[in-house]
Image 1: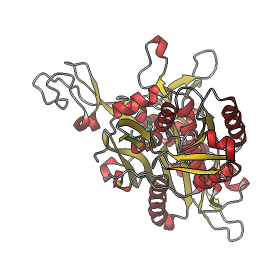
Image 2: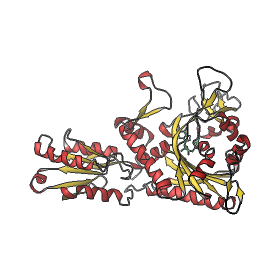
Image 3: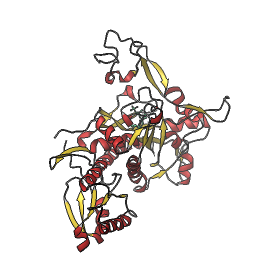
Image 4: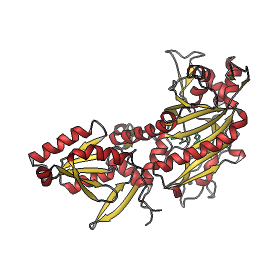
Length: 452
Ligand code: ATP
């Protein structure tokens, strides 16, 4: 069956179920800024937790860091961002729209019939101008020289400037990595497509410091590793691809970059970039700060500037990919149901606990007891609002993989049914085993039932 997902359906489900909604809405909204509601926060936090697990908890060679959003402006001068973190901007004098010169092929002119900018006789495009993407602000109450600072456009620089501290304190030698998750800010020229491109977003970045001779091998290793992470979390293989950058596309710091792209409803687009940044950043900060950011072997005296392999992922963009990949519609008992087939490990709610008849005090009491037990171990939800079919559908729409239903039989023999979101199969188990059963199912490998 063809994939039912469209960006409009994702936007509307996110709004309807309170995952994500436009920011500053009561004041008319602020373009490309979004606020995350309860389920959006839970989903985003789960994706982040899986990343930290894979990058830090399950490895001995990577440590965590949380650096400041506002850094000394010398950091951004040395890194090349003040001079070079720009996008080429083109304005159309006719339709007044603004485009990224390097994205004209994918853009649409403001005049009808809609064509690419520059294709209609009326289009009147300006020359491309370079526009710096960093948000500027200042420290202190008065505007004076030296007070200007930037909101970070990437988390990576906070890692490079701490290289010496971390390498010493963590007692690590290359190859080793530093991982960080946090907000970044970019004054994007053409934001849009929901949470795909926003002014503020969260990045999950890891800088892996390696001996220069091993950089190519580690570059390939991280491309495979990161692709596998998405597959393990249930993304369909047919919807992921690796796209190596052409040399004229490479960022100022990179000698090789490959994007992991996802087939979003808007087409193949970058989900994560894996770059070989060489010795660029450590060298630039060494020269500008006077602090030697290099590796020195205390025994042999050998010293060198490590090369850096960087897998840089967007948390919000990954969340969007997981939502798109999970979205499904099907007809069940002559009624359409919308279901998010999310991997149980990232689903916002792991199980619902539902008394079949909400007016039955005994059933409610048993259900509340089970809910209070389970919530100590997993994100579970209790619901006795409206008829059972509606409650199942609500849980399907937020991607809850399991539902425990307390019914008449529970009162007789202490069993409950557990309903599987994807297969709709219902199994009866002893209520005493509910917790163990749930935790086992959450830990089990999972494959999406969605076919291409
Ligand atoms: P793009 O080409 O789409 O602008 P980029 O190559 O500039 O992205 P990187 O600098 O490599 O992006 O940042 C790493 C990751 O951060 C991206 O793969 C993406 O997932 C995320 N990201 C970058 N910019 C944004 C944004 N404006 N909104 C949401 N996520 C973003």
